[in-house]
Length: 153
Image (cartoon, rainbow, N blue to C red; front, side):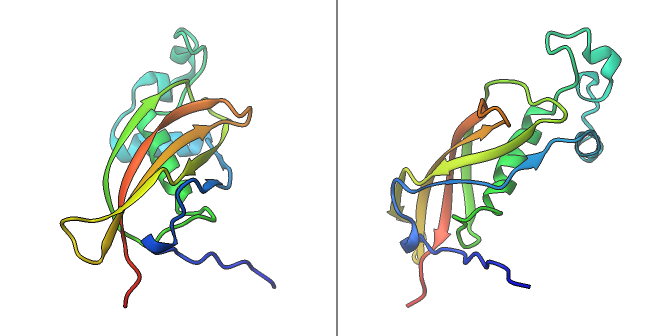
């Protein structure tokens, strides 16, 4: 069996302007219900189809924060994957609903990089990201700031 190995990148390996699109992820009923159970958020627009039909969405939709979680997870399964580091924060917007049955991917790029001023041996990346559905519509977008280790000497 021949499998492609993705190597985690150090801060030095980040190329400003480089873009990546993740593998797909299907938003299933089971996954939405598992997220509801995990978080305790059983709001009916996510968990009750009869109720959700009465909303402007017309059907059940995934939790907004579930979309952000999916985006973050998909980055770790992408070809442009960095060494484990520290998230410094997200700025994120919910643009359109994620419906059950949608297949989403995250498209992200390296916007900027700089050495950390406070932590020797680390660098900071700014990664603008878009969560897109199977019709290439942006359903969520934002920016992730992450601290990544520098290559050991």
